[in-house]
Length: 267
Image: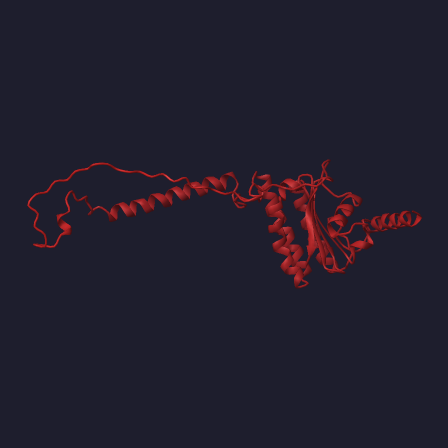
């Protein structure tokens, strides 16, 4: 029991040190903390300034933390749990709802975690987070830290803009189109359909219906003394087409009991 209490005290102290604004690896605004010292100070400052501007503009904190080993700062068994502990310990989040998104990198075993909270759960859906991961994981695999974090921030800004416009990136949505984009898409579609129909109509002007089948017979190949056409009956068959919906097709965000959403993995 005493050993467990001692470990908790150590973790609390280390978390306090990690979150201190005076840290040389932390940006002046407190949105980017490079405790693993992966980047020069000027890169950290540039990323921190960009994160601060979008966080204020969209009222949702956008954070980055790098550490040598997440187990030094957390009792969690994975990077996802560690990210949640860091988010709360460092009092992250915008406004009373503590809204935000955090990308945690743990270099020792190449772990990462991406989590969201508050309005972050709305702006960063499950599907959206998967798309967000795609833009930075390829950079991290090549140890391009600044490139990966830049791509992360740029994608976050795009997703927050779409969410505030009422169209968060999710299954079945067009991330580039808000209400205005939707109207433009409909107008363009109608215009293209009109052009295609006009062209097809003009190419069919010389075509007319044949009332008899004479034109399809070779001359003198058939001699019919009597012709009579009778329409007796018609049969119509209707077959129901089954549509299957895959699980999870509705999209949305899966939020855990602590109010967080997200996942962790390797890079």
